Amino acid sequence: MRRTLSRLAASPQGIMLATGIVLAIAFSIINPVFLSAPNLVDLLRNSIVTGIFAIGVLIVLASGGIDVSFTAIGAFSLYATTKLLIVSGIHPPMVAIFAIGIAIGVALGLVNGLLIGLLGLPTLIVTLATLSLFRGALLTFVGTLYYGTIPAEMVAYSRQPLLAFHLASGRIVQLPMAFLNLVLVATLVALILSGTMFGRKIYALGGSEEAAERIGINVRRVKLAIFMLAGGIAGLAGVTHVTLMRIANPFDLVGSELNVIAAVVLGGARITGGHGTVSGTIIGVLVITIINSSLLLIGVPTYWQRLVVGALILLGTGLPIAIERYNLHRARLRAVIAPVTALEASA
Image (cartoon, rainbow, N blue to C red; front, top):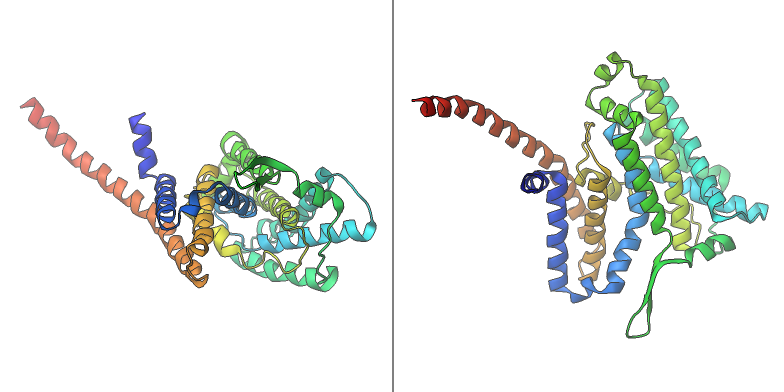
């Protein structure tokens, strides 16, 4: 038990968890409203879409790639799905609506997968290009009209609480049912990464693509599957965003890439690949959400948020390297000291 706790404390996830606790204590001292039930529920609500996006990005980063097109995929899915339902006049259940959004996301992810997996193009270049491509296609061919009235099924779903309780003032505090989407995606991806051959292949690609190919992994097929899965998750995040906001705006989501990537990096994933967990990513999402929401709560200007998030990205990128170098130095020191100790003991 003690060894497990010491490992957690020395890991990026443990340090970020401690950071989140310290921030929560600091913000609660500055403004006691931070620990109020409505604010805590708002923090969970604000983490839903960012969390779903972050889990999709985690899969790509763990494989050694990077994806910045996920918000464009989410925006395309949310708007195309909503417009399809409004124009056609059909009224499917929410499961089918989410399925439509996921299918659109998978199709757009397939574009990324074909360019990266089959043509072997760099992930950053491709996803930067498709970020602009998908967004341009959405505004050019699908539409720019703002829908303030969304299908009744989405409205009904948005009003269903997963958790609800009454305050002494008579106010009702609700955690939306959409929070289940984050829980389900996190559980599914955690099982894939830790308990399936596909998950092992993802980490193998992140560790060394050449070594993965030597042991028989079909790198192109795995990359194709990775970006299709990430696209589907982004599509789900987009439709979830509609149900939370109760509007369909084609200009939404794009521009929030920094917060999502920061959350994944802070959670222990590395740009170089081969590392990252769902639990660490969720911790990173909560830390980013606490910072973005609480700085406003205590009256800090919004432009400070980008400064803090940028500093945290540098911290999250450099911290794992520093910890790894420290552990390596410690192991080498032990290797040098051990023979001397043995000689002293025998003497």
